[in-house]
Length: 205
Image (cartoon, rainbow, N blue to C red):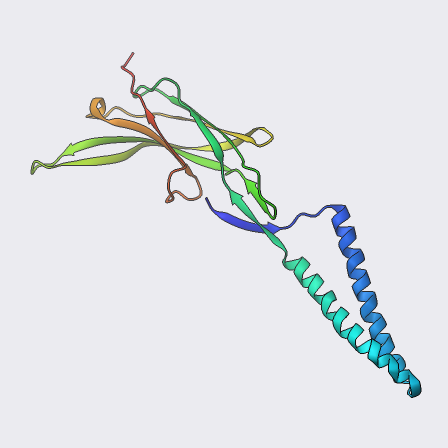
């Protein structure tokens, strides 16, 4: 599934602690600058330069690095699911709606990352059958009979549900065809399916 990055979300306590640390660094840099000014008075006060120059140089650099690092601090966002379970009933009948419901969980993110569930999932009803060519050869044909985009529904903390209906129209060779459902991340239809589940075709009513 696609990945992205986002700004780190910090608590109020983290922000206050960072501001205090930055204030200390800036204060030390200002002190070093002031010490260099005192050394310009001449006489024994030139000794202030021995203190002011390293203080100003080191703490100025540390202050700038602290600000730049904070502004560039980002974390990776992984769009992923686990423990996927597809509810599809005992089977399906051609020309009748097939209700699908995917239940899944969002895995716990490691430190420095955030995990999220896809906003939508594409569900496809796929039919596979053997096609006889004029020269006597046979080839396996795979076609999408129906497709729907299932939006995300938050069931409870860490769990999500995707639900939709699919319907197949009658076609020649349905009796010998193999049916399945493919689930893909809707934003990236060219990727490998998240889940492939076989379907059992029920006789007409």
